[in-house]
Amino acid sequence: MILVAYPLARILSSCGFSFRWIKLPFLIPILVPSAAITHVWSILFGEENFIGKYIFHLSGWKAQWQDILPLLILFIWKNCGYHILIFMIGFMLIPSEIYEASAIDGASKRQQEFYITLPLMTGPFFISILFTFIQQLKIGRELLLLYGEVPKESLYLLPYYFREEFFNMNIGRMSSAAVIFSIPILLAFFTLYKFISRKEN
Image 1 (tube, rainbow, N blue to C red):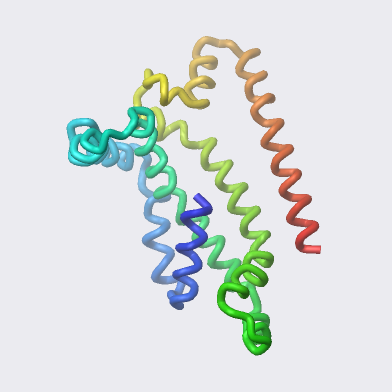
Image 2: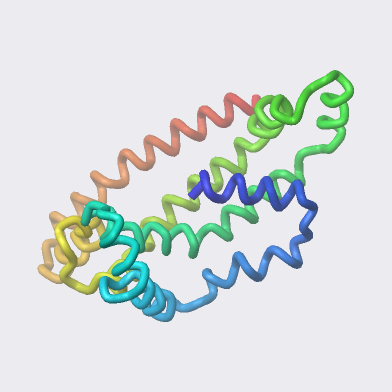
């Protein structure tokens, strides 16, 4: 998500696009209902449709990648607008005087990107990573609509496990899985937060 959103936001910021021309195209996927999006996706990526029939099958891709790719594209397309806006706001908050002073000192565009922009964008990067984790935990709705209640083995992701344990009333296993899953996420965010705080200081 970040590898897609950051370059797009950098290009849009450098081209001087105003927010009035950017908000609507990137926020439309957030506003469209998931049922409509998944229906269009099933038409595009179904095995009997153009993309699934002529690109996936003829290219000889592995079945696992063929199954998971529509979900990855859907996830990036639907949630990329958040991250583009976050990064663009971060670019706007960087004082232009810093770039002007570095240019006078002979810094190139590449040096400005690595030694000025990236260090000053640690805050937006942290927010973007946080939003990415929150959004990927909410992908279960699109997952069920796209692949049904009984998916292939390669598509049996975490939302299916929690749903199965919930309907089987295995509250103990579901609670244990939630705790086990949340501990590494909290540790990762705590480590990332400490790292970013140290960088900012």
